[in-house]
Length: 206
Image 1: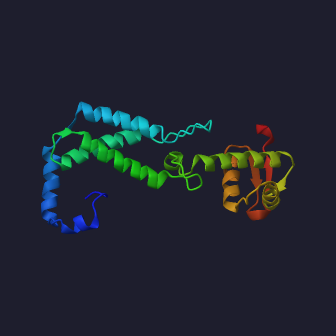
Image 2 (image 1 turned 90 degrees about the vertical axis):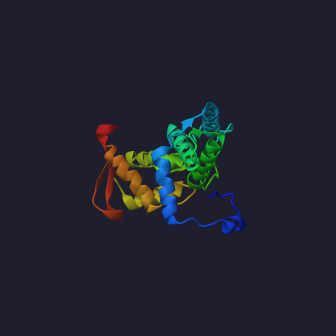
Image 3 (image 1 turned 30 degrees about the horizontal axis):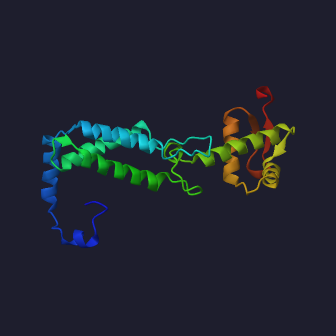
């Protein structure tokens, strides 16, 4: 049932009928309402604080939060669910330990920045890492500076200028996203379509 189970031990376990499992789960839902013990509460708080520290880097001025109140609520619900599975009327230390293991595993699998190898909750909350967000912010400033330096500039010329100034290649999709955001913020005005469209600074916003 758990990840720690070996293939050998799992293969020797009796396979329970679906009807039995269904009845078991229904019974647990209707009859078991476990309460958190003081030990479990203390462990939840301790684990939550430790998870929040996972993203801190003493070498960086930026502090990444790797656990939010949403993760704490999830740990509580998972602890209660694990206790229900045991038909226990109390949430004990073993239930919290399993809940914390599951949450950490989920965060590690989903929220690890492939570039840095660090856990970054921005990836969960916004769909992009803090590094990706900073790159987009820098690109936005670069685009706005180039547009404001001219009366009008075409998309193709803007893309070429940015790539000439950048260490890495800026893709069309990234530039288009930045332009749409700047246009929505009334920082720029665009005319036309595709690579030939013209981009101008919104003088009223400068």
